[in-house]
Image (cartoon, rainbow over all chains, first blue to last red; front, side, top):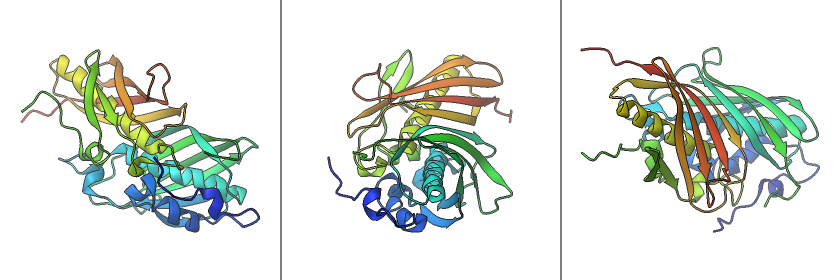
Amino acid sequence: MAFGKPDLGSITPKGAAFDPALVNKMMGKFGHGGFLNMEYVGHGDDWVELAIDWREDLVADPDTGILASAVIISLMDNATSMSIWTKLGEFRPQVTMDLRIDYLRPSPSGERVYGRGVCYHLTNSIGFVRGFAHNGNPDEPLAHASGTFIRIGDRIS
Amino acid sequence: MTDKPALPPYARALDMNIVDEIHGAPVIAMPFADRVQGRPGFLHGGAISGMLEIAAIAAIHQALWAKGSDSNIKQVNVTVDFMRGGLDQMTYAVGEVTRLGRTMANVEARAWQADRDKPIAMGYMHYLIKAKRAG
């Protein structure tokens, strides 16, 4: 099955600085990022923040309207992944090796959820990341994340 | 009422279904589609994690039900190891409650495709067990 979308390497040509806003236009429009409608919020030298709007079909418990925790995993996966390319200044093919999420509190019904991913160390093959999710006030996080990404061959498929 | 627990809206949106059971725990299946795709041709890690989570919750509900308990659960954390790329085919996941205590439970969940001995990802979860308040 092919879905006819370009890979990330093709929109971030060698020599051009990595632009998380531009890349999220694709990651947030197609595939799982598109299903979740992930939006770019902001970035710095080593971090990227994305957001997902609350939606009825993303709920784990219809009685409470609390978001499925896997929605937070997807958000943190994309935000931390992009933080590596942002720190690096260019795209390089990688896959998630592991990701841990601690849920400090549920994300309430109707609330937009923000995920900030930070790359705190980078080697030739591994990106070490952490991050947190919140509902608009970064001082009141709802989840913390940490994980690692491993670089893969220059061709990703 | 059937004895099959209804899957949550998130699981239904990703077209997950209960197709079997292993040691009493429901086996979740999810077909490949654009909405669960990450890099082209591969499942998104978040969608795989979603299956692990749904399988883990189904396993723990089953284990509580078998004990005659109507307690609620609250997820404390999860660690997911991604072992293989998820290809464009059917994916399965099942949870195993490795310990069910009075205050917490440890659950492992495995996701695989063609061969259950070759997992594409494993999830390790901790849940808080909360007795329902009377009245």
